[in-house]
Amino acid sequence: MRELADLAVLFALGNPAAHAQSKPPSLSSPQTPAGIQLWTSAELQTRTRALKLNERGQGVDRLENWANHSLQQERLEGSTLAEAHQTLADVFVITSGEVTLIAGGVIEEPNASSPTETRGKSITGGTTRKLAVGDVVHIPAKTPHQLIVEAGKQSTFLVLKVETK
Image (cartoon, helix red, strand yellow):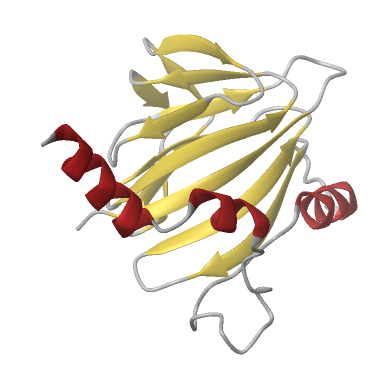
C-alpha cells in the first residue's frame, strides 16, 4: 500500500529530474499569465540608489498598486514619522542594514495626513525591536509604528501595504 501511495505522489509530481532540468518560461514570454510582475534584485538596488531622500532621510519608490494592495521599497537614513493606518496593514521585509521598529503606544503630536492615516512626531509607550536583513514584520491596521535608523547608517526595505476593510 505504501508503494502505491509513493507511485501516486510521483505520478502527480511528474519526473523530479525533468523539473530540475526544465526552465520556467521567461516572465516576458506569451506563456506568462497576465498580472505577473518581477523586479530583479539588481533592478531594485539600482532604483534604491537613485531615490531622493526627504528632510527626514527617507526615500520611497512606489513599485505598483493593485486592487487591494501595493508594493513599495524605501531607503532610510534617518527616521520615518510615526504613523497609523486605519484600513491598511503593513508588511516590512528588511533588505539591507538594520532599523529600529517602534510599534504600539501613542503617536505624539498626531495629525490626520489623510482620512485614513494619522502621522506624528514620535511614539511613546511602544515596543522597540531591532530588525535586520531578512526579517519580516507584519503591522496590523490601526497600530502606531515608526522606523528609525542609527545616525550615519542606512537601511532598505520592501513594504507590502494590504487593504483590510
